[in-house]
Image (tube, rainbow, N blue to C red; front, side, top):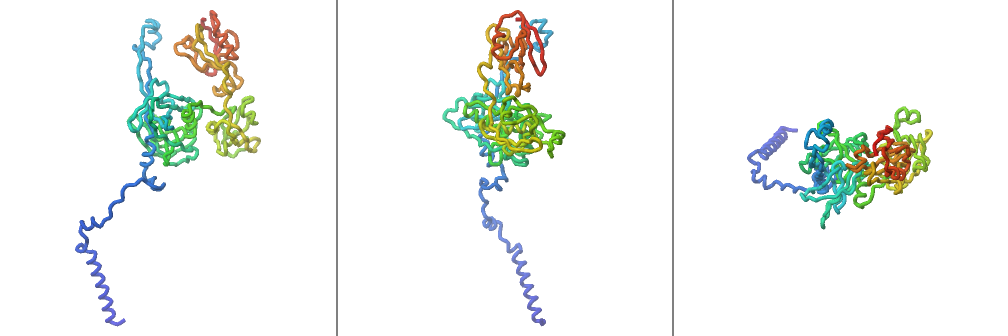
Length: 487
């Protein structure tokens, strides 16, 4: 390359450098006004259109679900003694029981509920409205309605309410999800009325599934979440990101009364059964397996040749019950229900309870080290005939007592042997002679004046007799006691 070529190349580079500097210098930059005119207008806010977009904000889910969640206000009227000494036995004996008057006192409970039918049917927790004399609900838009209690189900701690005078109004009902499809780590929202401050939304994840030991209900199989749940959230909705109901918020674990990130919800698959019965006005009819079960411990699993302890071990079978007719015997281990594994008796009870009556169910059974699938048709407990019930009225020491004759299904539910005999008290009228005598619900009356109470008829006939004294043999909390009272 000669000198001339080098000078031309150098000149070209210098020209380009100078041109670039001038092009990006402040003197050649557009004015602020020109820049604003040239900038594109911001895109209008839109509702997310895809799963990816919707996860950036919960607002569309809340907008869809919030109208279905209501506030529940339950009023109770309780009798309160005027004097602080009214409950003291010494002062009552000294001054006389009639000296201490009582007066009614109102107390109010706050909770939440979920609209499950457009006609105005609401699902909530039973403990929110238990003992209430007046229940009202308030919708998210501010409207208030009086409601009637249609169902109170102590076994699930759920209740169904119906708006008393809906008129021509229809209400936004929530859609149920399949709670069995939930996975640990799924995002969920809790909507309710914590502390009565008004409708509130909190977010979190599913922390665990199939939690037991939370409440003393018959079907413990709770969803655990770290979405903040506080007093007042009870009966509210736990929803997924599709806006579908996955659970009914029902309990918290807390030593202070506030949320510590451990809340529990009743799965939607169980809640749906109670809601459906409330919508149709029918009765909750649950399956009965007819066997007592226990958890499989490590020692039991080792003795049965199992690699890990899981399943529900049958400890006792009710004679001629559904389990016995299907061929189950004590020592069998149920491993799964319709292909869904069960870890313990609570899981089995929950899985079976969510099956419709009459449905053919596949139960995986372990016996003698080998597993097999057994076809089992879901059956209800035997119906209660009229002659198995009795209520005592009139001039009797037992007036105000309602009893039911024991059968295998009732004995199992009350933790009694399948062959237990007697009549069990199902109700005591407050202030009645039976109430003053000290009888309680769930007492089992075994004999009256040495006459065995094997049937409700025997109890009715004997309890209506006029005698000077009564010798009562009853079982209470597992203990058999003998008492003598005047006639």
